[in-house]
Structures are given as structure tokens and as C-alpha cells.
Image 1 (cartoon, rainbow, N blue to C red):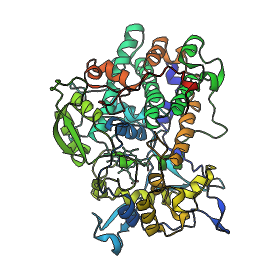
Image 2 (cartoon, rainbow, N blue to C red; image 1 turned 180 degrees about the horizontal axis):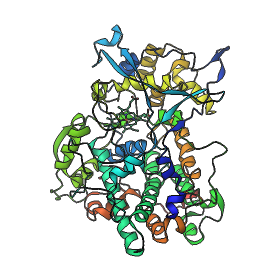
Image 3 (cartoon, rainbow, N blue to C red; image 1 turned 30 degrees about the horizontal axis):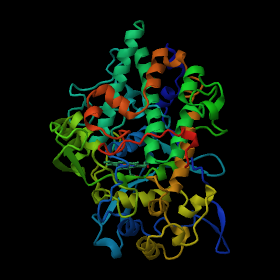
Image 4 (cartoon, rainbow, N blue to C red; image 1 turned 90 degrees about the vertical axis):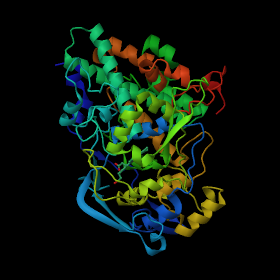
Length: 557
Ligand code: HEM
């Protein structure tokens, strides 16, 4: 049995995927307006009504994009990661939400049904109940490899360590057009495109390993290629995607420190991780560090990743045969409604569009801004999927569901959430934003009871730090979990070595610094022809980052 087979906790977890989503911020007792109050939990599930919040504060009025900062590849990457990490198990019991009279005329669904989240006993005092994650929470690439034995078997080619892929470079499909991949629930064309890109990457790594280690059988090639691919995904997320999401020098430095340490890549390449977490980075630490709490992803993490506002209403397909204007956006050829890019229909369309055109088109399209009144209307009567990718018959209003979900899962509301993170709570709406229209709308729904403010609404309403595509409140959770995902995993620590990854596998990881490197590998002319910007996650015709001769750690934040 190979080293990776015996040592791979990710593989072990893939066979046993039911991991708790613990609630790390327990309900707190707080002094609010001179009164002692148990925040969060004493607030009712329907107070204020989720459909009212969805209609009056979330639903898109006019699409707002996020400028040149983040494109549709970055938006799809979000979902690509979510489908690697989290999916709450549902109960068999259905909830029905009926829109109240005050908004019923504005709700696409007057009422809708969905499954309650399955709640189980934690056998501990606080919290005494919790929820189950159907996906493996490790950064194990389960989004392409699967979450259990059957899922893993389905995607493997069982030849030379490879995964199945169709001749056009996209995912294979079953006879009813459901894609063959690790996770296929609620998929859309942009998401399945990223899955296909990383299947290509896995297969290229298998080829490379086969060339250097001819003695490796299919199993060994698969296991090693999987480790290398998963780590490349984690690295891109850490030092490319997150850096674009939180575009400041401080965060650029922080994320690179997470991976390479303060001494940087060159020193780490020479000496490895000999100076510890701060100086040499979290990756390659001698031992995993879970700070005394077994690793899992938390409810709060799920809540701050609720970013369906990044989804647009349409996808603009570009004419990639028109190369008259080097490195500028190719002309728009067709506009397709997002709704038609989802599920089986989306897969059929993608196979006609082709991988190259879809990538270039998504690269040139800005994604939605994380702000109020930007929640896609088309998601308010959505055909959701079962875990096997089959379409459900009951349409759902996602904007209302999301408000309900956080309350149902006892995630603290906005102010208590901040208090628990030792952030300053708000006392009045003006503490959160200076936008008069937002203040007025919040007052209309929540009165002046700031303790009632839903977390989802708060993180969309909060005034953003310059350069940040997300709120400061969400950022706290992002940054905590970003480090934890690396330091708690022995495949990024104890076992980040040539014995586990192979020498050539580690070299492959080391030379891959960004998504652009992966794109260049599989589409050698694409970035040369179409990308002006520095990161594949920015809008491709935007300016590259200007050269900065000041060493990174000396730059002003
Ligand atoms: C066309 C694309 C997408 C579709 C159709 C879709 C659909 C869905 C559906 C149906 C759910 C389950 C809702 C429930 O019952 O609680 C869900 C959950 C979720 N989605 Fe999406 N989604 C899409 C893209 C995204 C994107 C871009 C993000 C960005 C981060 C995202 C983040 C999440 C999160 C965090 C959850 C909660 C997961 C959980 O409760 O375990 N989704 N999505």
C-alpha cells in the first residue's frame, strides 16, 4: 500500500464524511441598553419575516458589479471551494415559508417548501445540538474527487492514475446530462468549468509522475496526483484568490506569510520550514496544530460565505476569434441568462460554448458586489438540486432561505456575532454605514433594535474597508479559518514532504503560484492573448499591478 494510502486522513475522511459543523460562537449574555439579554437565541425564527427581509433588503434592484477587482472566475471559485468544504445534511421534515401580505405581491413564490437542517445531539453541554456536514471539510479536492467511496470510484479512469474527462476537455456526463464529478449539486457552467480545469491539472500531474516514477501503478499515481492537485488548489486560494478578494498590501503580506513565512519563498526553498510558523509559514510545519479543538468548519464560516450576490443575471459570451485588439476585451457575441447556465441545461450549453470561450468570457466579466439589494431575483424561484444532481420539484426562494438558515442553525445575529469576535458592536445603524438609504431601510425592517439585525444583512450593509470585496465582520472569520485549514492538516504540515508527495510533486507545487499558471499550462496562448491584469481573478482587461520596488513588509498598509 502506498504511503499516501496509509497516511491520507483526507482519504479516510472521504470514506467517513459526516463531520460536525461546530458552532464556535456560543450565544452570549450581554448588556444591551442596560438590560441583560441572551442575544440571538431568544429571537424568533420568523422575526422579522425572512421574505420581508429578502424582498426589502436583499433582492436585486439593479445589478451592481465589483468593478475590475473580481471576475466571474473568482465568483465560480467561491462555489468551487464551498463544494469542497460544506453542505449541511437535511432532515426529511419540510418547512413551509408563506410570504406575508405586506410583500406577497413582490415575491416570485407566494409560499415554498424546503427541508429543515438535520439537527443532532452533540453529547456536550454547550452547544448541546449541532449539524452534520455531508462534504469533507478538509482541503482535499473532494469537489473533483468525491466525498465517499462510490463518488471517488465514479470519477476515476483507473488508468495511469487519471480522472475521467471528455475529449473536448470538459467533464463527462451521464446519459441525462448530469456531470461526472466529485460534487455536482447546484452546479452551473462556470463551476463545472473549474472542475474540468482541475481534472486536466490532475491528469497532467499523473503524466508527469508516470514519466519520473515508472514503477508507480494506477493507484499510486492517482493518490500522489490527488495530493499535489489539492495542495495547488489550497495554494491558489491562499496566495492568489484571497489576495484579490482583500486587495491591500497588508493582506498580500499576510497570505504570503501563511504559505511561505516572513522570510519568503526564496529562503523557504533553500531551507524548508526550519524557522516555524511566522518565519517559514504554516505549510511544512513539523506538526499539525489544532489548538486543542479537532478540526472542522464552523457554522459562522458557512454564514459568511453566503455570497450569492456575486452571481450576475447574465453571462456575456465573447467572440474569441476576434483578436484584433490585443489584450482588450473581445466583443460580446451573445448574452445568456444565468438561469439557462444551471444544471443539465447549463452543461449542454457549456459543451457547445467550449472551455476556452467560457474561460475568456468569464475572465472578462465582473461579478456581483457583496452589498444590499444585489441578491439575484432569479434565485428567488430556483430549481435546487438533490445531492445526486437531480432537479427538485419544489422551487425555492434562496434569499429567504438564507435568512432562515442562519437563524435555524443558531448562528448569532450581526451584533452578537461581532461581540463574540471582540469587535465593537453597533449601537445605532449609523455606526455601520453612512448610506442614508440603507439606514432608512434597516429602520423600516428592524426598527431601532440593532440586536435583531440578521448577520447576512449586516455583512452586506456594512461599509467596506477600501480594497476589501467583503465586510470587516466576515473578514475576521475568513482570516481565522484560512490559517486553520492549513495548520490543522497534516498534509500541509507533517506530511508536506517528498516521501508523501514525491520530489517531483513538491516541485510542481512550488512552481505553481497562481491560477494563471494553471491556465497557462493548459491553454498556453490564453493569458498572452487576453490577460492584461496580474491575477486571473481580476477582470482580464484591467491594468496589471504596478511594479512596487518597496519590499512587501515595508509598504504602508
Ligand atoms: C448558480 C450558482 C449557484 C446555485 C444554483 C446555488 C444554489 C444553492 C442552494 C440551492 C443552496 C442550498 C440552500 C439551502 O437549502 O440552505 C446553496 C447553499 C449555499 N451556497 Fe450556493 N449556489 C450557487 C452559487 C454559490 C456561490 C457563487 C456561492 C458563494 C460563496 C455559494 C455559497 C453557498 C453557501 C455558503 C451555501 C450554504 C451551504 C450550506 O448550508 O451547507 N453558492 N446554494
